[in-house]
Amino acid sequence: MKKLLTTIMLLSVYFVSAQAYQGKGDDKFQIGANVQNNATGINVSYDFGVGENISLGFSSVYALGIDENLDADFGDRFDLKARFNANLGNVVKIDENFDIYPGLSFGLKNFGGHLGMRYFFSDGFGVFTEFNTPIAKYKSEALTLAEKTHNQFTMSFGATFNL
Image (tube, rainbow, N blue to C red):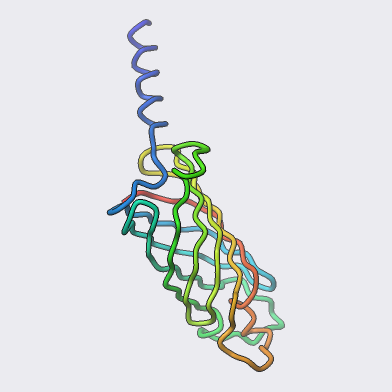
């Protein structure tokens, strides 16, 4: 019984000893749901560490559930963004398993900003949430409802993985 308890305790420490952002060379993959006005979809992102607190990457969203009133083709449903993150988990020091990352993104639809948070339960698996908003839209005239799909405040949440 004593050996069993010791083994369980050691495994718990192993599984909880994750670190949310490890600096240069760190690779993160995220997949989750994207929620916005008149649409829901899937969000996929990849970030790689280039410095102690800096990561670069890309993010893509495809809107699956679009309001029937919108005449949205593939171009309206899809967005791809290059992104820059300032990983501040080691600065705010809430928990070494937690990372908060404000950032900027340059996409097919707009130039925007985001605020994301990750929490890792193990070295390889965690959860994330991210809030995105456009700062500058590429189209200056009035946007159609379909064009507003990726030009508004959005929220994403899902699973994150260390690669």
